[in-house]
Length: 204
Image (cartoon, rainbow, N blue to C red; front, side, top):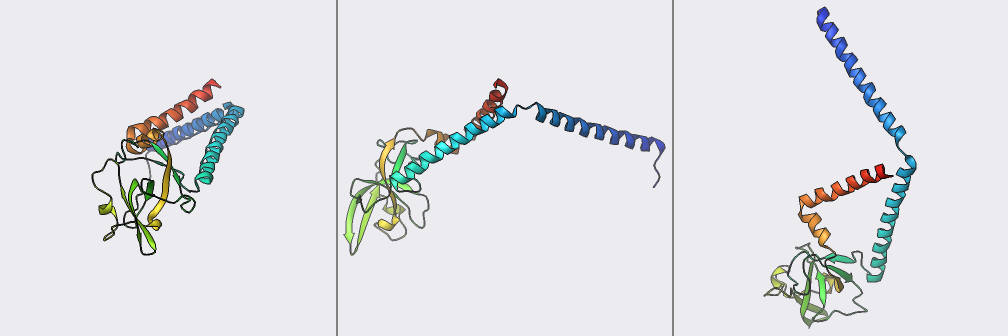
């Protein structure tokens, strides 16, 4: 199919403009790479790695001290008020043989049909045959957790217990709550990270 001379000229101009744009972009990227102070980039990357390593060290130390792969949990509801409020962080301990669970202890339990762990207090402990049964309840709830157990169960057993709540760090988990529940906070969080990185780069 033959093109008119005008159309051929327009196509040639388009190809030249496109090539010019590509060349301009490549030159800009190359100049940007050359202008970067890589010593500052490496220095800030090492600072970030150091912060990650320190956080990981603290987390593994907590795992060792509490004998639990998840050494800390954030309170998500108000069912344990006034002792625990939303946003409090609870350390979880799992050595039941060295520290038996008793009435009044705060435990984390999870059932097969309800995979979300629940942090509540034991209000009754009873020996049933060769097993020990427990009934739990949130301090702020009017009723026990029996209606939350798997169908037909009145008591939960040791196999249903994940950990005991050993000590509390008030309000430590508020950032986790905001991050998981608020899209605006997640945007604000990432905006701060990016803007801090940019300002730190130009300041350095």
